[in-house]
Amino acid sequence: MSSSLILYFQLTESYDDLLPVGQDERWDIFKKFHAYLEESFPLMYEFLTAINTYVKPLLLTAHQDVVPVDLSNEGQWIHQPYSRYYDGTWIWGRGSVDDKADLIVQLITVNSLVEAGFQPQRTIVLAFGFDEESSGTEGAGKPAVYLEERYGKNAFAMLLDEGEGTIFALPGVSEKGYLDANIQIFTPERHSSIPPHHTSIGLLSLLIVSLEANPCNPRLTRNGTAFAAAQCAVAHSPEGRAGPTGDGSFTNSRKSCLKAIPFFDILSRTTQAVDLISGGVKSNALPEQAQAIINHRIAEYSSTSEIQNHITDLVLPFAVMHNLSVHAFGKDVDSDYQDSELGKIVLSEASSRYQADDAVVTPSLGSGTRSYWNLTQNIFRYFYREDKDDKYNGIHTINEGDIFYTICRSRTMTVIHLVSYPEESFIEQIRFFTRLLLNMDEVRSY
Image (cartoon, rainbow, N blue to C red; front, side):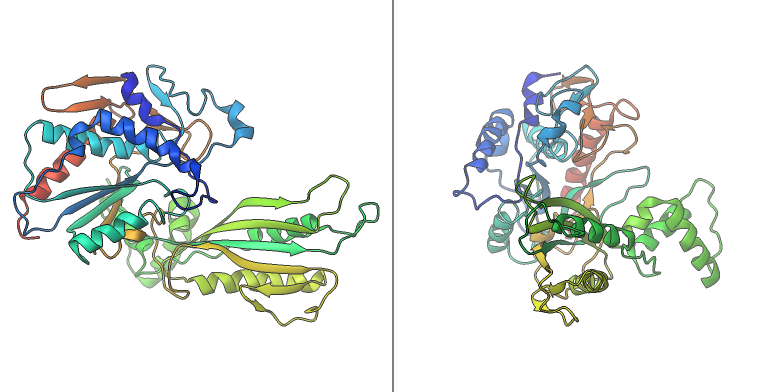
C-alpha cells in the first residue's frame, strides 16, 4: 500500500462549536490536507474547459472532515485512530469509511481520465465540504452560493453525494430534516448536605428515560419513500413473487416489515438520539443546571413544529409531577407551576438545519445536500459498495476501517485495490464513477 495514499486519513476533525473560517485556528488542519491533495492529484488543479457548454454540468460532492475521536475511548481502538496503519488487508483510521474514501475515489477517477486524455463534453464540478459533520454552513454553504451565482438556479443536470450501496442500489432521492433539541433543567441553589429527592441531573435522567420510552411512531404510508423501497425490493426479489396487494395485506405486511427490518423502521419515522449531556461543577456541590441535546432526524411526513410539540407533550406531565415550570421553544407553557420555585425546564433548538419552521422535510441517509437544493432537482445519494464486510465496525465509531489489498497503476488509470466482497470493491467504485462520467458525457439532451 502506497504510504502517500494512506496519508488521506489525516486528522481533519470538525466540531459543533467551530467559529467561522478565519476566526478559529482549528480550521488550519485542513491546509495540510489540501496540500496533500494538490500534490497527489495535480491535474485536478488545472482548469479544463468542456467542449459542449449547452448541456448542464454534473456535480459530485463529498466531505473532507470527520467526526472527532472520543479520547476517553482511544485505548479501545485496535490501532490508533489517526495512525493510518495498514495491516495488509485493512487501513485503520477515522474517516476511512465516512467519507474520505468517496472523496479519493472521485479524485482518482477524474484525475485518471484527464491523464488518459479525456476531454469532457459536459462540465464536471467536484465540491468537497469540510464541516459536514458539524453544520455544513462553511464547507458546502459557501460553494453552493458561488455555484448558483456562476451557473444559475437549477443549472446542474444531476448531483451525486455520499450514500449507501447494498445488494439493492439505494440512491437517496430525498432527505430527512435535522433538529437538535436542547433540554435544560434549572434547580435552586442548595447545600449538598441537604439534597432534594432529585437533583437537576437526576431530574434530567428521569426525563430522558421518559423521552426514550416514547419515541415517534413509524408510519409506512403508500406514498412514502420507505414503502416505495419495499415495493422495489419485493418486485426484484430472487423468488420473483409479487405477493398480495390489498389494503388488508398492506396493513399486515407493514407491521411485519417494520418489525423484521430495522432499516424500514428507521426510514419511516423520526429518530431521536441523546448524544450530549452535561451538568454539575463539583462533587460536593448540587448542580444548579443540567443539559442534554437530543438529535432528531425528521421523517418526510413530519415537521419541526410537530417534533417540538411531541417533546413538549411528554415534558408537561413530567413537569407537573415534579412541580417544575416549563419554557418550551420560545414561549412559556401554561401549567400549575408556572412560577415554581422548585425549578424550571427550558426547551430550545440547539441548531436547526433548515429554513422554514414548518417546512415538511423528506427522508434519506442524512442532510448533506441541503446547501445544493437550488442547483438541481436531480439529487441522489449513493456510493458503490455492498456494505457486507467492506467496512470494519461502522462509521462514527471505534475501529473505523476499510479493506485494502494492493495498489496498482496502469497507463490509463490509478486504482486502489479494495477487497471486501469479491476482491474488487474499491476498483468497482472507481469503475462506477468512470462509467457515470462517460455515460453522462454521451447524453446531449440534458
